[in-house]
Length: 435
Image 1 (cartoon, rainbow, N blue to C red):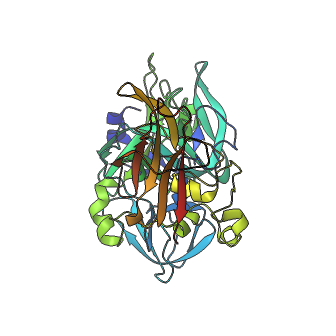
Image 2: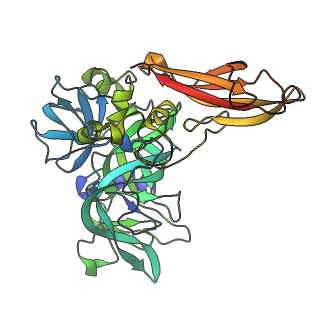
Image 3: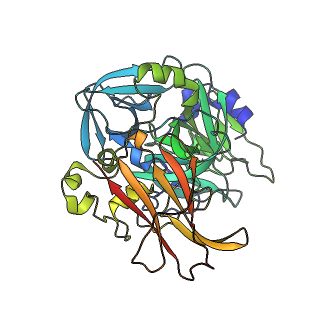
């Protein structure tokens, strides 16, 4: 539906939108699609569960979820990568659907999600996380596919992508929400939400880090073809043209046009509540310190961490040929099989890029790599080296450092020796840890 219609008829009443609960996709109905990490550190690692719903740690003793989830009570246990955290208090936002849960202070979260400032929210291709329904049967109106009904609930955590179309003040107890359209053949992994996704996080890339931008709230619906379908049904529709939707009081026929009229889903916008969040959740305003031990707990269970052969620095859990110390050092995920090389000048994850460049009419080797800042708890040492024979190595060259954010910087080293001076040159980066 068009945003003006959302403002006028959908947000005004909870009867006019289904409370959001699971990720469904435009491209596929495969129930196993995207049930593992995306592999790009875009939020999967920050999702935890309580009573079947998702929540996101945002400070040492606090996680964020949706206020409308009635199943939650103080004393319930929040599970974060298999580790248990007991809730001791719930802090409700006075004018949004956000709820901050406080856990026992004797056991803080090892690390937690950075929060979006809102600078890049609108227009961003976001990663959306949820759990619940599969895609159901097709909705066809006038012999034209419009989308799919909600299918079978399975409680599996999934991720998808969608572009954040915009945001607006929904008023009442909802405050500012961001919304995404479910577009026909949209972005890769284009997704919609359904029952089960509430509390899940929407993450956007800002300043080199994926940051929590929203908490899943609601979806458009219900819909029906005509009065013969009674109260209609919830569905993920990429075109509501020719369908009827319930505006909270009446069924309204949406005009059918050549252009699709996509339905949408909504999330409470984190950036609009930063003052309340930071005042309530002590520590949420700063980027979490992240040593190797904290990083391990983003991907492994306590049982896996107890087994160094599975999760230790020299282990290679995903069998991609990169040990965990290097995955940690170069912003890769230890549970995602990928031999990614850093993209020159702009990359934010990947193994060092070594290439030949023409500089001042002379050919030289260069190394470009990510480096964790020790000020963020890394305790790492990175040593760049060049060699003519793979035997003798020297730390030489011109070093250029670009700060990305409070956790990462990009380092480029240009060899001091030209090809004319040495026909054979090799380069490497050695990483060691003092922890």
